[in-house]
Length: 138
Ligand code: IDP
Ligand code: MG
Image (cartoon, rainbow, N blue to C red; front, side):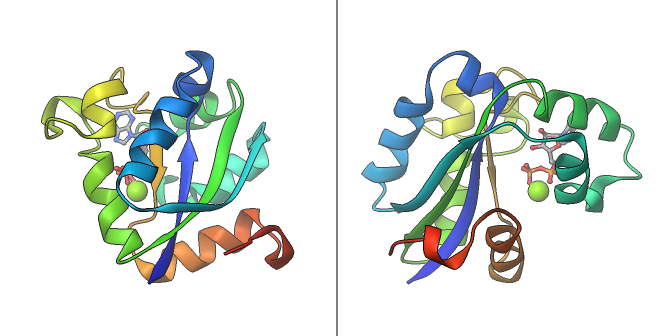
């Protein structure tokens, strides 16, 4: 069992498809053990994506991630980090496998509906960035 951090991004909250995404998460035996709807500040978004600060897409990414509400989540299950990356699909939906969240819902490489941690270590850091221990009920 382990935990991963997820964000349902603004393109998805705007289209009211957060339930459709949660359905796929739950059908894959990941349990949503924490969840809240928030609006990211510029500072918070820049801190979260600091690793990408030198990328050409960074400014657009911050503008997009602060353009509407997001749902931040903690997911728990067997190999949660790896499993969620698999059910999310590739960053660019054009390269995503059939049945993945990004293949089904993403609009393009930026507006790709979901974030998921890429390692167990990063999952721990990202969960702490958004949740207090008492907000997580496993
Ligand atoms: P990931 O979300 O699949 O881990 P990352 O490479 O970590 O992908 O990129 C973080 C986010 O930045 C992506 O999910 C996407 O929203 C955005 N992004 C990544 N690459 C591009 C790009 O080439 N153009 C525009 N946005 C991008
Ligand atoms: Mg990433």
